Every structure is written in structure tokens, then in C-alpha cells.
Image 1 (cartoon, one colour):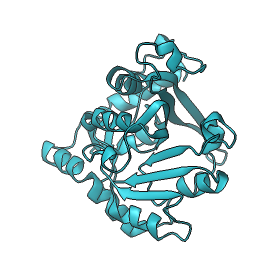
Image 2 (spheres, helix red, strand yellow):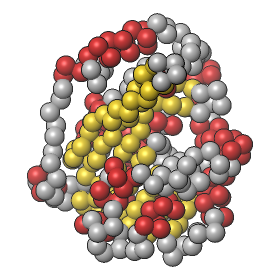
Image 3 (cartoon, helix red, strand yellow):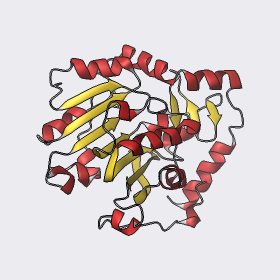
Length: 287
């Protein structure tokens, strides 16, 4: 991100000084799963498109990758109605997918899909901030965890609990693939006054939460708290151009990979040959 853009974004956000009253903050946070259940009741399986792009962004999801050589096990957190599950199962005939969501209605749609079979996929209801994944998935048995547009739906104070929960079921050397809304994203800048709960946390009209991540926040959660190695951690900027209105705008996503140590005493071994880029671009000053 360019410094001029960051300065403009900060100026926009600084104008919104109001926050949602404490009562409503607690209500929105405590009813996060309920509000997403209502979302799926209204939209059923018709809102999100299937995610056929994920293997372009994450090589670990491609057939023939190291993780695909011997019947890999994948967990998708925040599976929704299966927009990630079905493309990945179709591409890789050997993969087994655990899929969880804190919306019972969403999980029901996955289980009712004509492609659902428990020889390939097990879908279950789970609030990853409080329900232990290891009650359903054997500890240290998962090769890949996909966390794609899910952590943004969690209150910031519960995100570290979710990381600890995930780490318990990761194999040594297992990876978390992360993509979510990045700080200064167009959607964040478009929120009107009255939607802000706290810095970088907002509530939509339907009551669902949306948190916007910095790379420093991801490092704090997954490296400092989770004890994982950082393989990648950066911003993906997609420029949208409206030729009719002559307006350019940026969609900004935080994208990262984290890996569980193979040997807790040897972090370099845990990297498995991946390139570790921990250099911070302090000039971005995104916090």
C-alpha cells in the first residue's frame, strides 16, 4: 500500500469518532452465531459463489503438492454452505475435509448437499472460540487448516482462543492458510457512523461482525500467541475501476500462511524449506 493511500485512509477513519453503545456491542458479539444463522436462513445457498480461486492463491491446495501426496486431511473453519468444500473435493479425489461453522443452518446445507458423503467430508457445528475441535477431530491430525474470511466474524478478544483451538489439531508441520479483510479495505472505509464497535471492528446492517486485519495483528495472533512459524504475511490489493464514474478504489485483503513446528526446538526445520519473510515495512505504519 502506498503511503499517500494510507494517509487518506487514516483521515477517513479518524472522522468516525462514535462507537456503538456498550449494551449493543455485547449483544452483537454474544449473538454472532445467531446472526449468521439468520443470514443463511434469508440467503440459503445463493449468496456466496464457489471459491474456485483458492488453489491459485495457496499452492498447498493444488493436486500434486507435497500436502496432496498421501491422502491429506483438511479442516475448513467457517465453512458456510460449502463454497470452498465442493471445489476442493472435486479437484482432489484423495483429500478428506472436515468442515465446521457456528451456524447450524449453514452446516445443515452442507450435509444436505448431493455431493456430501462422510467418506470424503465431515461437517459439524462448532464455535471455534469455545467448542473444542479435538472433541471431533483427533489432535495433531490435520495437514491444512483453511481460515478464509472467517476470523473477521469473530470478536477480537476471542480470536486468540480460536488460534489455540486450531493449533491443537494441527499436525507437526501442518499449515494454516489465512485470507481475510485487510485494514483500510474499501468496505471498512465505506462504513457510516454508528457501525463502529472499536478500532477495526464494525457491525453490518444484518448484525454480523466485520474485523479488518493488519499484518501485525496476524503476527500477534498466530506467532506470538499460537507459537507458529510465519511463512507468508502480506496484503493483497485488488484495484477496482469504475470507468463510468471515473473512480478507482482498493479492495485490501490480509493473506498469510503459518506452520506448526516440526521440532519445537528447531524453528528453521519447521519452515520445511519455505521462505520466511519477517521483514516489516515500517514505512507502511498500518497500526
